[in-house]
Image (tube, rainbow over all chains, first blue to last red; front, side, top):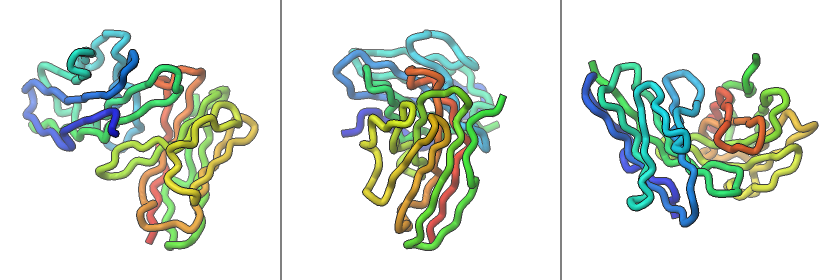
Length: 109
Length: 114
């Protein structure tokens, strides 16, 4: 069973529009959740983690345990946000990450 | 400082041949991970090493896949008798400690099996 679901393979928005990349997870314990980003021709890198509750590059993500979701949001998308975004789950004590299949975000001018 | 490096960056091989992919982690990083990245499948976990031992090999897709790590540093992922479905980008990552999220990724090796 898929433990991290990103329902949208592709997401396209216009510059200045709000963007939300969806992520749902399946885990009975206390999850740690993360968003990773891969810009064109660059390495995959950590964008943010839920536990830090910080905003990175204008992005935020709130863990909703009731809905088992960890959606990534930005109020005003920029062209430089165009990238592949992966949601990831660390199951307690597993020392590994389970990634979703990714969402390719395109921000059009 | 130097990041995670992988070699070769690209590899084209014929179906049925064996290939070896190499990962050089950041110096001092104790944990090392291998992933496969393919269109439609996202990032699939293959195996991870803590030091030279592999506590979790659950992601290896078949017994044609194996990996080793020596000296707590370099790791090699070997695919025997390659198949076309093995075509993908193989990513390596390393972490300085036990926090799995602190993964520093390499640039990947793009494997094409013809």
